Amino acid sequence: MNIKKQLQGMASYKPGMTPAQVQRDLGLEKIVKLSSNENPYGPSPKAVQAALESMQGAAIYPDGYGLNLKLALAERYQLSKEHFILGNGTDEIIMILCRALLDATSNTVAPTPSFSQYLHNAQIEGCEMREVELIDGAHDLNGMLKQIDEQTKIVWLCNPNNPTGVYMNTEDFHAFMQQVPSHVLVVSDEAYVEYVTADDFPDTIQALEQYKNLIILRTFSKAYGLAGMRIGYGIGAPDFIQGVDPARGPFNTSVPAQAAAVAAIADVDYLERTRTENAVVRKTFVEFCKEQGLDVYPSETNFVLVDFKRPAAEIYDALLQKGYIVRSGAALGYPEAVRITVGTKEDMNGLQSAIQELRQEQLSGEAQ
Ligand SMILES: *Cc1c(COP(=O)(O)O)cnc(C)c1O
Image 1: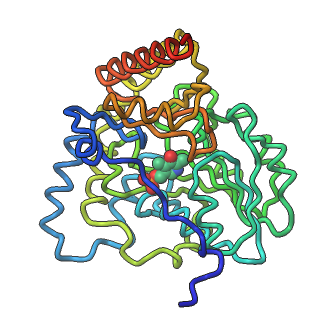
Image 2 (image 1 turned 90 degrees about the vertical axis):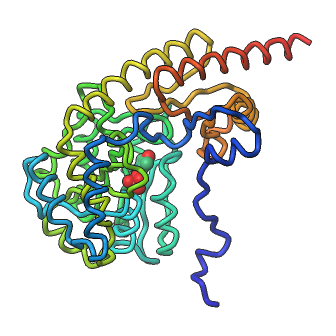
């Protein structure tokens, strides 16, 4: 079969282990999954209720346009419904954008290490990939600007960045946008925006008026606790959204996903509790890491990249044995770090004890 040349040798996305797998393999009773930045408090009960009720209509195709959800988003952001595109997760919007803008004659500029799906999808379109190394976990914006030329179609920003958790502030964002040529689409992937506590995070929604070449990506998978429903959205200039929309599948977001998302937006208190709790637990965990002499990247998200200065696989395995699934940095560009999702207070207390044990074991190992 004549599969595209660029797909040969490409690997499928490799998710981390599921708790069921770990339970089976290790026979552990309690498994805590801290590997995919999911919401440890689960979805809003109102979102669950709305999804269940929507199932009565499951025999009928969903509203492909997603009118109810777009109206709820428009109200939430004080924009028009034409500013929005819905996706089967933000992942799908990344795919749609690549499909709509990239080909073998173009190039795309992305930070690295960052979210893998930008380059994964760009590669499938046969596009040239220009990767620019982070500096201390942050985007090298000047380095990225230097890579832009006439053939550049998309520049990716991940703010805050996954896997480092580091954010770009308002000043840097605007300085960057003002230097990007207007023919280049800038994607600001803000999957973790609801978790940000810094007060100089850019108001990109407001910036849409100023920069017609900006699209913002947000998701219900993280702070809204709906990762399993697969629903995310893009916010951009209505002309642009209309232009790329034919690249979207006709019924790409499901009946229960749309219903859950509408209810989740309405449950403002639930989101607020998640945000507050995450900020408290994140702070405690970061302080713990520092007390342990472990370097962490300053995180504005619901995960922390912890530098153990040991092979990541070793840390990953040791924590797995103790019932904690974390994400090895080996696959994320940080061979001596692990990325740990901020769980509940109780789970993080347990994890902290596990890390302390691990540190003792390491120290006594070194002493021998
Ligand atoms: C989790 C994540 C996404 C994908 O979210 P979905 O909406 O579940 O597809 C996108 N970007 C970043 C940086 C993420 O971490």
